[in-house]
Image (cartoon, rainbow over all chains, first blue to last red; front, top):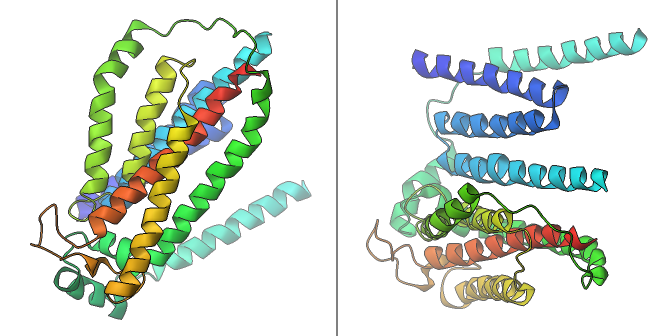
Length: 84
Length: 233
């Protein structure tokens, strides 16, 4: 019980740090997108801890999978447009 | 200065709100009335091992139909907005850098596995966690992998539209069959509920979730394909 609470708190802390990195990150857009995807991935682990595997699967597939890919897709498109 | 102060006050307000929620939180010892009804009656009435799926597809089936409709509208609007760039499709394409060996070979290896896993997730929705929406998203991620490995690849819009609309119409049709043959709209007992825990059990739930999975997969794929076709702009 205490172990799962500690794990949950650790996950929450990691999510907050990653979310800050995604929003305030100044290094590159790629790192921001990756941290946003990691927020989704850790959130799905959190849902798993809270005994909601169905929500966890949706979050992992859409929140961290498709959205991250989509962001990179658009980022690549925008970059290619800049070089023209 | 005033802006920052307001921001701090706002943050403190939200923080105290959440602190109040957390400090006064007492977990329930027992399930409430609705939850205990679902927990006790699902296996007996509907024959579904996964209670969440039974609620989503049967008890709250109308909500699922609404969600699928919202997703359909989103896909339609994305297609409408992005379809404008297609008039220049005849132009010679810009030379794209070839995808790496890793991506090409990985796609060839992983694509069948991802498709199989997606089909597994939505056809076993009544037994294991997961279901139509999750399975559909997994199918769409296979499409995404194909698009990544070869951005110039073209998919048949006609096929995607056909899969999407057939699945949607069949979903509504099964729902109406529920009114005629069983207890109400989207009742799953139009088919025998079968043995608890087997693949062909729980009445129409596997059928409905397969349709939802195909529909969601087709909708996500059509969005991705429309997005990738703006390349010719």
